[in-house]
Structures are given as C-alpha cells and as structure tokens.
Image 1 (cartoon, one colour):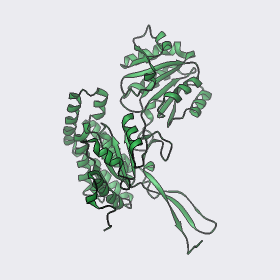
Image 2 (cartoon, helix red, strand yellow):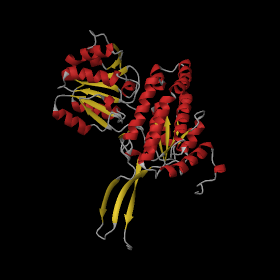
Image 3 (cartoon, rainbow, N blue to C red):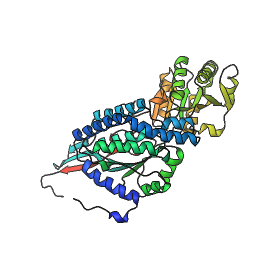
Image 4 (tube, rainbow, N blue to C red):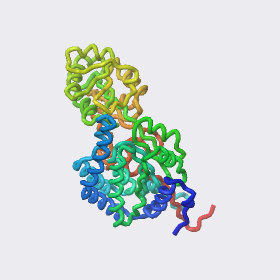
Length: 428
C-alpha cells in the first residue's frame, strides 16, 4: 500500500475526500476497458432499477425550488422524471460503447538515434466538477470520468442536494460489485460555500476543476481557484439570417434554436437579420416566435416591422445583447451586412455557438472564417452543440477557452498525455 501524500488529520473535509479520490484514481487508471465498461453498464442498470428512489428524492428538491420562487426554466433543469432517468441511463450505456481514449497513441516515431518515442493518452487523475441545479450532470460527469480513468469529485448546488445524494449513492453501490473503487465517485457537501473554497484550494489533490453553471459561478472558480481550471462558458448564442437565406429554413432554424429547450446553454439568445431580407423575414419570424411563446427584445428596426404581427415586442437595451436569458426571450436586431453581424457577435457573444442561415457559399465561408466561437453552424440549429449530438457520448461541459479543450468535451478532453521513450541502453 502506498503512503498517502498528505496525512489525513491535516486535511479539511474536502481535502480528505480528495485524498481518497486520488488513491482511487491510482487504482482506476490502469484498469482495462472491459472492467470500466462493465462498471458503467452496472451503473446504468442500477439507475433504472432505482428510479422510484431517485424521483422521490428529486421531488424534494423541486418542491423546495418552487417554494423559493425559482424560475420555471431552472426548475425544468432540476427536474428528473422516469423518462429522463431512462435517458440518463441510456447515455451511460452510450459512454460504455465509446472507444477508450486511455493508451491511445497520439503520435509516435523512431528517432534517428534508434529511440522509440510515443505520446500516449493518460487520465487527468482527480477531476472536480462544480455545477448548478442539473442533477443529470452528476451521472454524465461520473460516467465520462470513469470511462477515461479519472476519479471525480462532484460539487452540485444545494438546490439539487437530495437528488445528487441519491444518484451518487446508487452509482457507488453499483461500483461496489465491480473492479472500480467506490471512492472514485464522491459527492462534495453542498451545504456551504466553504466546501467550494476548499475544493478550489485542493491543489496537489485535485488535478483540474470544471465549473458548469451561470456566469457568476464560472467567474468565481476561474478567478479564485488555485487548482487548474477548464473554463466552460455561458451560452449567449446568435442566429444570423443572411440576405440570401431560405425563409422557411431560417424560421425553422430560429425557432428550434430558441424554443426547443430554452433553458440550456446552446439555445439562441440573439437574432440578427440582414436588412435586405428583413421586410420579408421578420413578420414571419416574429409570428413564429410568438406562437412558441417567445418575447422579443428588439431594436428600433425590428420594432418597425412588428406592427402587424402577434409578437410580444419590447425595446432592447445594451443589457439584452449580453444576456443569456435561459427563458422564452430573445434579443433581435437588423444589421446592414454580414460583417456588421460578425462585429455584433464579436462584441457580445460568449464564444459558445453562432449560426448562419444562407444559400450563399461565399457568405457561409466568410462567416465561419470570421466568427471566433467554439462552434459555428451553417443552416443548422445552435442546439446541435452538444457532446451527444456530436457523437461524443454525454459531455462533461462545453469549454469556451482555447487551451487543451474547446467546445463539447468528451472522453479525449478528459485525458492528458505522457511520452514513453524506449531504448536499448541509449545514453546521451
């Protein structure tokens, strides 16, 4: 048995949990794919078998949220139903079916002196996740971390604590009959801000922190953590309707981007319309948004075209251009050119996802070249920016930074690399 890096009695509560996770990570890292997959399938079966228990715990969280006056968009993100639990279990099975990134040779060569050099993927180690009001993240994060050979510390919000406690208990019980130690998945107490502070200061025990939630949470973790952070971003996403757009397609893409599920980060929050198509497009678009229940926060040129529509339209302010509504609201403006649309996006976007609707290949090419976001969609909804939709399985988050990982983070993004150098008595 290895000697612990730090004496248990010198650690705060989160540090003790992190140390146990670190020791579990060392046992987990070398496990073959078959053992990890078997554990994930056991977890998926256990989740479905424990549906009643999980739904009952979730009902406590939902009731407290409604009593506290929480918005319905947040309540929706918090809610677990039997159908959603089945979908979460299916996501775990999908992760089990994905290729194992650990041990993959990223590059390799034989050097001129005969040394064999390989760069291979290895687990990050202990991954901390700080997230808000979405208990499905508890399972997604655990599955992806286990598959990629990492232990995970889960610090959800107090609003989902009953749900997260039930989910982690089910996961750990399922792991007890597998080769993966139960300590590889642990829930960090969510009863005080102090636990987040301790997690952010657990450098040397936690290898990376990934925040998922609102702008305030992400900013706090990025600015205050001594543990390395992969920054996931808020989703101020844009749909730009070009002068040469197909109107039917543009309406369909816009409504799906905004209203298919408005409480998530890849939902559109701003509509930009080229002036040459505004007269033809906006009345149709505003009526379609009205039918979907969306309120439009519009600039003057949009409001001028809203008179004969059914839309609920209010005057936009600068605050609207930077807002991630996560609700049935959207900001809207008319722009004079594609370059003006790009300038607006560069000023106000969070760098998540932007879409262009156009029949012009030249316009699509220029837009994709100039827009600097993790994902640029051409004639497709912003809602496709998602690890599952990209074929990655469930995602750990959507990174809006430019180092190591960018966009939906699947299994490869939860690994680092090391070099293996093999010689035959070589000396320098």
